Amino acid sequence: QLQLVESGGGLVQPGGSLRLSCTASGGSLADYVIGWFRKAPGKEREGVSSISASGLSTNYEAPVKERSRISRDNPMNTVYLQVNNLIPEDTGVYYCAAGSKFAALLLDEIDFSSWGQGTQVTVSS
Image (cartoon, rainbow, N blue to C red; front, side, top):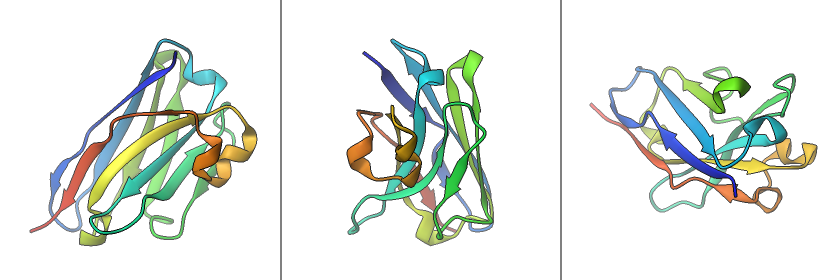
């Protein structure tokens, strides 16, 4: 069974950058759409970005569009999310998830079958 582990979170000052990693074991990430989600304190979990299995298609939601880049290294079984110009509203737990359908690019949680445990991102001065 595919298992996902996120890393790269931490405390960052506003305006800083982070690169989050999502690494898989127990299967090949190359077979899946990978999505990044985040849950801010007091808010529901929301989709952030996604990338197709081939890496040729990507999707970014409005809160991070123009500030983020998602990429994947299939031989390394890893997907990355780079977020720049971080703002306090980016604070939250960031999760990656794997979905087998292309439609998962649209970041509907129902299309994702495997989830990581999350990594905390805190943006604060």
